[in-house]
Image (cartoon, rainbow, N blue to C red; front, side, top):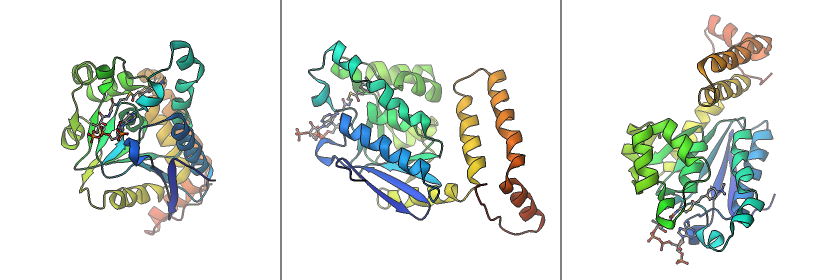
Length: 257
Ligand code: DAK
């Protein structure tokens, strides 16, 4: 597939989507949004890919939605262009999506990161929801996902008063899995993603689905999702292989079946 706003590549079992509008700090215009989700869906269907990375460049993961594209939009036009539906496509991706963040992750860029499953941040990463400074509020899940992750008071400060978080603060508040040097941050993220991509594929998908349920349901409903995802794994070849490999003291050979 030919893309104009992103670059894609595969390294072993890791699919990489790189946001590529450096002239605009990787701001998400509608074209880039569409291409990112198209690429994620292609990798999601590719049997040779076990985990997906979304990244930007050293200076910016993404500085939000494209303000220049949005500036003249009316209420009706915003409703009509189905922005919300587009952003929501992230929820349909079944494989783990890892954000590799360096530099700015602001507004929609930060919200994109919050929608990912894990985050590798370079030491220069900075996260924030500056929408209030341009007269709007987060519209791609920021108020909800941020509050669930970092708690009410800090989320309020970020959303209402444009408080940004350094990589260290973001890790302290549970928004980042690991911090790595700026130089080689993508390689570090790929190494992390390769580890994840080497796990039993069906179990990984079931696990992702179950952990996500924790953020969307009551405890009772979430526990029901866990059960629903747990038992079918005993119908997979990988469960037999995994347990047999443990007993035989060898590495499992996953088939994704
Ligand atoms: N949009 C468009 N262009 C942007 C941009 C953005 N968000 N951010 C940066 N740029 C452009 C700049 O305009 C500049 O372009 P030229 O002037 O050279 O043509 C170029 O990128 C370099 O930026 P700077 O010169 O400003 O670079 P600095 O290093 O000085 O500053 C910065 C970097 C990231 C701190 C700064 O650019 C900045 O504050 N950017 C804006 C950040 C921001 O306010 N982000 C929130 C945007 S609103 C929705 C869902 C979600 C959303 C909307 C709708 N629906 C479901 C309906 C999301 C909304 C947002 O994200």
